[in-house]
Length: 235
Length: 149
Image (cartoon, rainbow over all chains, first blue to last red; front, side):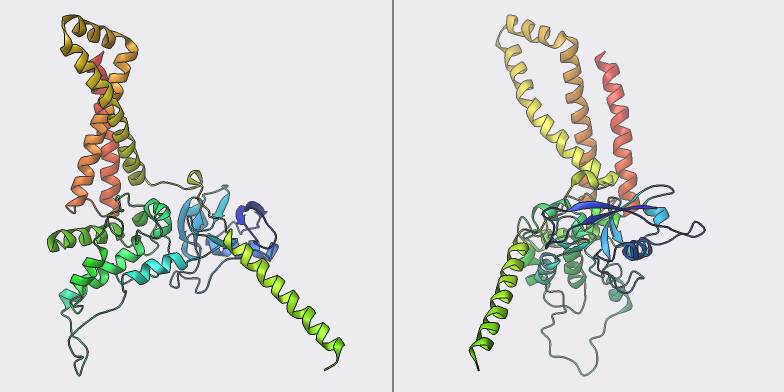
C-alpha cells in the first residue's frame, strides 16, 4: 500500500514535503491507519507523530486522513482510502506544525481554557456529593465524552480564520456541557463571557465538526443551544 | 581552575547559546497545513459555502437589475431599450443564473433558518437536508429554464 506522509523537520527542511512510502499490508485483514503508520515508521524511523492508547480514548493521534480529520487508531484503511488507493496522511489543518504529523495545540487549548471547563458552584460544599436527578444527568450525554483530540476544531473554517477569537466546536461543546449542568451556578457569567460577535456567532453551521468527530458528538447542536440561551438571557 | 578549563567551559556555553538561538528561529516560522484542496468537504459544508457564493452573486446582480429597472422606468424608449437588452440569449442566460442563485439562496437559507430553531441539527438530518437543498434547487433550475425559454 502506498502511503503519502506530510514531512517537515524544522532543523532540516525549509518547507514541508509529501513523502511516499510503500508499505506491505496483509491482504487478509483490515488494518487501522495507525498500524500502517507504524509499518511506515519501521521503514523510516524519522517519522514523528503522537499516539498513546491506540483505541480511540486518549485523542493523541488526530490527523487529516485522505482529507478527513480522524483518529488514526480507530480509522480502518478500508474506510479511509478504499482498496488499491493511496493513503494520504497530513497533520491537523490550521495549526502550526512542530514536526511531520505533530501540531502545536496550544491555541486550541487556550480556547478550551476560556470557557472555564470546570464546575462552578457558589453554594457551600455539602457533606456528600452534589446530587443530580437522572434526568438532569442525561442532559450531559453527548457532551462530556469529548476527548479533546482537536479533530473538530481543526476541520472548522471559522476556527482556521479566527483561531484566537472563535472558541471553536470543541470549546463550545464543553461550554454547553457546563451550561447544561444542573449543579453549575455560573450560567449567567458563562453566557456573558460568550456574548460577542466572534466567540459563538462565527459558527455558520456547516457541520464539518459533526462530520469528523470520532466520538460521534454534535458540537453544532450544542452551539445552537448556546445561541438560544444567549437569546433568552439577552445579556 | 586553570585557563584551559575556562576556555573549554566558554566553548561549551557558546555552543549551547547558538543552539538555543537557532531553535528559537525555527519556532517562529512553523508551517501550517491548510491546503483547501487536500480537504474533503462534507455535503453540508458545500451547501453552506454555495449559499454564501449565491448571496454574493445576488448582491452583484442587484446593481444590474436596478439599472435595468431604472432604464425601463425612464421613458417608453428606455423601456424598449431594456426589453431589447433582455432579449438576447446571453441576457436570458444571465437572468437564468440570477433566478437559480435566488432559488438556491432561498432554499439553502430556509435550511439554515430551520437549523437555527433546532431542526435538522443531527448529522443524518443535516446530510439529508443538504442533499434535499441540492435536489430542489436542480428542479427549480430546470423549471426556471422552461419558464425562460
